Image (cartoon, rainbow, N blue to C red; front, top):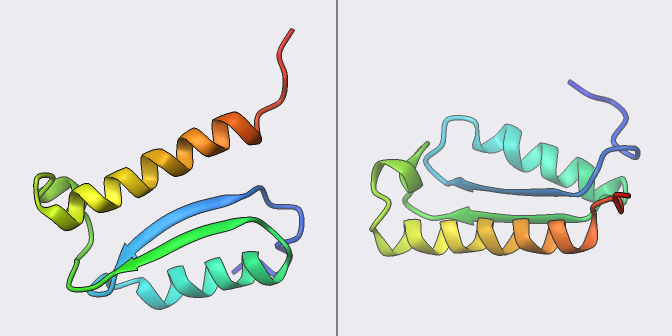
Length: 84
């Protein structure tokens, strides 16, 4: 497991609370946040690994997808390096 988090880029993630690796995901996001990285993270109750793909039309899946896409749009607008 990583020991140094301060040089890592901003992070965007979500996880269902039934995900087998929820503890590892939460720990990783907390370590990034403690190191000063910008972190946008949500836990979705009652959801398992891949819920957003397996049931994409479920309301909670749509919420997770919207969260992810809005976060990605923000990252593109705020964190990219200008190109020539």
